[in-house]
Each structure stands twice: as structure tokens, then as C-alpha cells.
Picture (tube, rainbow, N blue to C red):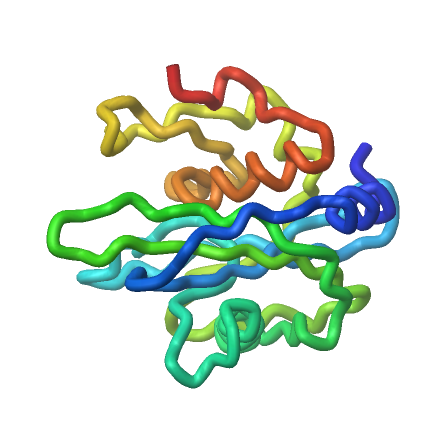
Length: 202
């Protein structure tokens, strides 16, 4: 089991790897947890389908681009979470920060650095999504480790191999992959767990 106290201790001891974001686009997300028992749940969103949005329809953590008005990447993650799902994570407990993850470089597009911050919200309000989010729901952290949930996402990556994924819902698009999958790898590694091999690239 992965209790809240185990998560709290592991993140407190973790020194996050930060990437130099000078000259790069910045984005930030919030990994939000609820439930103080033996099986905390994490908040996921399914992004709405929008033409021209490279993350359209993806499973993700709430978050988005760091705007000029944001005091920091962390402020951006908190603002975006409030806007997208109506949860004020700034009023909860900040448990720590994960390692930064670089986005894949695309021709003609500045490189991207994404930061992730972990929060615990004891009694989150009902989720209220905005136009950017198709749906939002809570999912048990321990279930992320169930081998039967680990699939190969049917899309060739920039390195020519399929992406690993984790199925967290019944819908066709409800598979975590890409940047969110990489953040989950970091998060679970900090907690002393590895994702099942069936979900890894060969």
C-alpha cells in the first residue's frame, strides 16, 4: 500500500531535478491527492477535444502554460488547477516537487520544460470543470501499479517506438501516456516503486 504518510515522507526527502528553462516555454501541473487512509487517490483530467491543441483529448494532471502574470511555475500550477477543476490546492498541503520533465522538441517550436508539484487536499470540493476539460475524476494511486492496466499506447513516439500507457478508465482515450506517464514514473520511483515492464518501451 502507499499511505499518505509514506508519500509525505518520501517527497520531503526528495531533492527534485530542475531543468534550465531559459529561452524555453514553461508549463506546470499539479498532482493532487486526497484520502488520508491506506489508498490515497490522485486527480486526473481528460482534456477537451480542441482543434490545434497538441494535448487535445489527453489524460493529464491539471495545469498549463506559465503566463507572464504568474509569480512562478508553482503559482501557474495552482492557478490552472483552480481554473480547470475548481480545487484551491494553494490552501492544501504542498507535499513536494517532482523532477522537471522536458517536452519533445518540435521543428520551429521552442523547447518546453514542465514542472510538477504535489499537493494533498483533505476535503476537496466537488470537481467543477471549465471548457478546457472534458471530465475530471479521482483514481487510486495503488491501482496505477496493477500490471493489467499497463498497455502500449497506439502511437509511434518521436524515437520510433510506441508509448507505454496506463489505462485508468473505460473510455478509449482514458490512457495516461507521454508527459503525464513520465511524471508518474518519477513519482512512483520516489516512493520506491517501478511501473510494470509491460508498460515500458522496448
